Every structure is written in C-alpha cells, then in structure tokens.
Image (tube, one colour):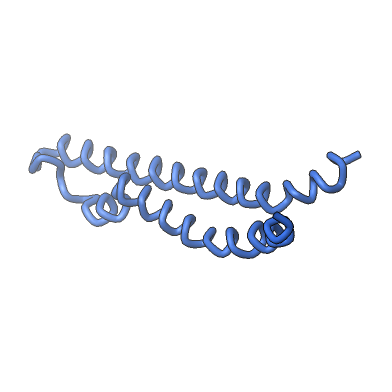
Length: 102
C-alpha cells in the first residue's frame, strides 16, 4: 500500500502524461477521418453526384466548403477541450494538496 502511495506522483505526472500526445493525435485523426476534411478539400471543385450543371457545381462547392469549415472548427474545439482536461489533470492534485485554494 505504501509503495502505491509513493508511486502515485510518478504515475500521475510521468506515465499518464506520456500517453497524452498519442491520445491527442489519435483523436484528431479519428475526427478527421469522420469529417473527411482532406477528402473534401481534394474534391472541392468536383460536382457531387456528377451533377455538372451550374447549380450542381455551386451547391457541391458550398456543401464541401461548409463541411471543411465545420469539421475543422469541431476538431479545433475538441483539441482545445482535451488540452484543458490535460491541464486540469496536472493541476488537480496540487489543488487538493494546497487546501482547495484557501
């Protein structure tokens, strides 16, 4: 039991944070795969459903552009939220030790 207590700071501040970059990268790649931002950028000027009319091209461009912007914004906000959770993870034990800020 004493060994677990003494190992806690090492685990909390060294082992867990070493996995954070992988979590951030994998989550970003998963979200990018779901939103297909790279694919939408590559096909930005290709008409959807092979609708080569003027309206088809305009709507396809707008649809893909909005999807790229919305997906990028969602990924950015998710990454910022994850960074805030990580900062909270690092600060929380110190907050408890210092008596809840009193």
